[in-house]
Figure: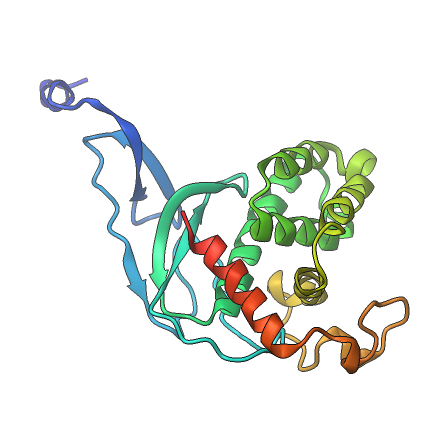
Length: 243
């Protein structure tokens, strides 16, 4: 350590709370620093139609589910850590429709858990369970259930052996929800390819328009009331936005 570095270190004290900060310009990562020497991260306001931003997977389309447009003055985009967990910090502020925040958060968590799963499993195994992982990410994004996510992280260490348990665990928890929330998560999971960036846009029609067999909402008339669905979407988005 040089004398200049020693002088700088002598003036720095570790803080009690982490400060989010942008990493070096050569990387696309965002890290959390625990030293007062680290520059404090300034939350920026994103444009409504932004395409990509550092540290988050933007999915701004609203056509993945049909409900009323909901104007808002800006929602907090949560900072998701490398294990797909809510960190308790705000990454950006975004004047977007609640549907965009939900899809973006689910996509970001899914990306994190897919990267984590690839560290412990072969690629073809991770691909086989990609829909189950997205379903787990969707449930975690809407519930912030840390116990559930810890179990998913454990199962991801050996998907060949424990992969089927992810879907069962998610069904066990989501089955306790009301029809509105279960309808929302079903529409999220229906858009697996889009949220995994395998397609450019979500499908034009929701799942119940396809009259899929063994579906609770196989007929449009069986779908939740649009007003109740809109309120449900808002509640989920505001819960995600609350840090």
